[in-house]
Image (cartoon, rainbow, N blue to C red; front, side, top):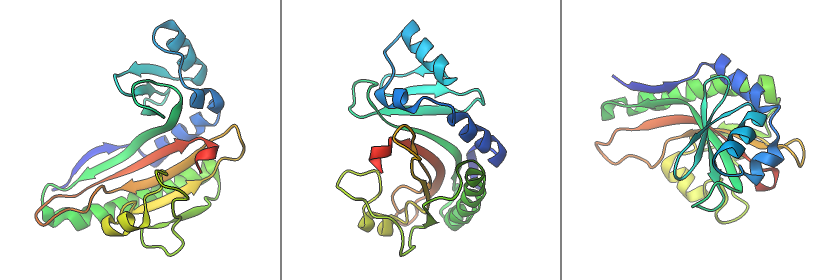
Length: 202
């Protein structure tokens, strides 16, 4: 049998996206002020609760979802390069279940993508890893996967992009992360993830 490690319902996912509509994104990208009361106050302004860790800042939203803020440069919390969370995660318990993992991840991504449309509207792109219109990274080190790696690993298996509506917003990316293609006898996992980036990162 497969193992379901994480699952938020599409309805919960919708609530999480709606909660982000009222966030002060320029302040998010500038990053938190540090530890202590200043950090708590900063999170309160966003409607979050801080869950500090060594390498990233994790926050808990009013919906109970944990999200991570990844810094531009390691060793600190600011400025912030992206905000990310996983809404669904399934792993195969046997290599024979790898195809089942792919099928279920595609089904779940479709449900989450529909939920995201109800909040964010029509995406600029929405499709599969082998779609001829799949967007290519504009530069080296961009968050979009290089074409060769994407085709080799079939990852992102699915992708939808909602660009920022203005200079003070966010670019929202919903994708299925498969990681590296499994070798013979290896078990596959799939994560439906959401990443938010500054407008200029598009």
